[in-house]
Amino acid sequence: MSLKIGVLGLQGDVREHIRMLQLLGVESLIVKLPEDLSLVDGLIIPGGESTTMIRIMKEIEMYEPLKEKIEEGFPVFGTCAGMILLSKKVEGSDQLTLKVLDIEVERNAYGRQIESFEVDIKVPQFGDKPVRAVFIRAPKIVKAGNEVEALAEYEGTPVFVRENNVMATSFHPELTDDARVHEYFIKIVGEFKK
Ligand code: GLN
Image (cartoon, rainbow, N blue to C red; front, side):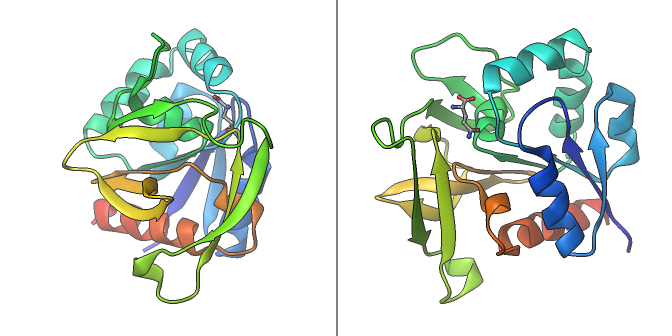
C-alpha cells in the first residue's frame, strides 16, 4: 500500500518532518491549501508558533475542513505547537484549537529558564532503546481524558500520546535521526487507510 503523508506548511519546522519522511522512504507533500488535504492519507502538524499557525489556518479557511476530517478518522500527528493545535484547551487562555485530542495543555511549560533541553525517554512500544526527546518551549499536558493513551512519559507526565487517529508529542522527534516516532505514525495512517 502506498501512503502519502502531508506536512502542514503554514509555519514552523516543516522541512525537518519532510526529511524524516524521506528517510523512511515515504512520499510526502507540503500542505498549504485546504484542497491539498484530499491528496494525503495523514497529516503532520509541525512545531512553530501555535497562535500564528491557527490564525493562518482560519484565514485560509482550513480550520473547519481539517477539524471535520480529523473527526471522521483522518490521522494527524502534532509535535509541540502541533500538539497545542490538536488539544481541547490551552490552560488559562481562550486560544483557539482544533479540539480533537482530549488533553489540556500548558504552553511553554518546560524549560522556561533553559529554553530547551534534551532527555532520553523510554517508549515501551519501541523496546529498550530510548528515544532522544528534544523539548523546545514545549507544551505540558496538564489533563488527559480516559481515551488518551500515554505512549511515553517524562517526570510522570505524558509527552507522547495517542487517541485513535490523533497522535502528539510535546517534544521534537524530527530533530533527531531516530525515525521510530514517525514510523509509528505511518503505521497508524496505514491502519486507517484499510
Ligand atoms: N511555544 C510554542 C507555542 O506555544 C511551541 C514551541 C514549539 O513548537 N517548539 O506555540
